[in-house]
Image (cartoon, rainbow, N blue to C red; front, side):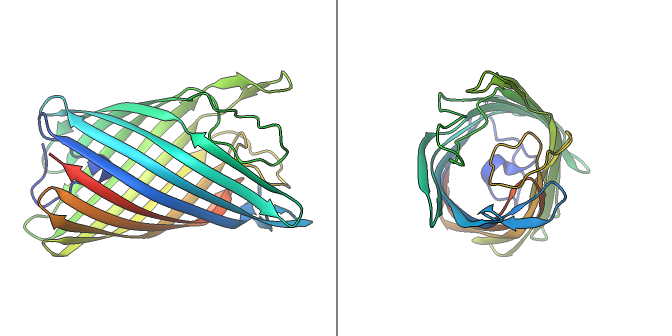
Length: 277
């Protein structure tokens, strides 16, 4: 169900992969932050009001799609991350494999718009969600999670434009902390929107918006945390996709966190290499 004129981008929006076709993308990304949003949306410096610091994370991300049937696509992703927290008083680095995700997407409508439903399962990979060092960065929440999403897309072919968006519901489980307490993560609503223009047949320019809305009550936050029970954020930025040969693409993305609750105010940049066959 690939759409004519639509680039084969990561997750391909609402469009399913063609039957028995494969899409693989390897990305390198960096995230930098010196500010964090509090529970009321105001910002404070990392690591706290009294301790100036910086969050710096590098990651290698692997994402793949496979067309099981003409309308049904299997999806999987994982990542290796190296995250550092540093200030004049401390420098802590955490490295390892983050969560593994597996999903299915079914395209159930073709015209006048494309609509699909998808589901994801997320599993931790054995990392420690409660590092022994105070303020140490983590590789994930350490809980199983599941999400359901509605995806909508529209190609304006032969005009070189398309739009795509999604909204979902993510259930997150609970775990026992290092101190023996039960940590229960409230559900959240992920969302995404993109609009793209192709000025030439070898390039697409995109505007991106994605984020998460936490459904729990945010707790008071006065020090650095990547694993607050409830957090929300909205990120926006540009993206460019270059086709360098048949079946090969390079894409460059930049996102900035323009609003948030209990989340870092980060600059995110990624460089990806994609192959479809």
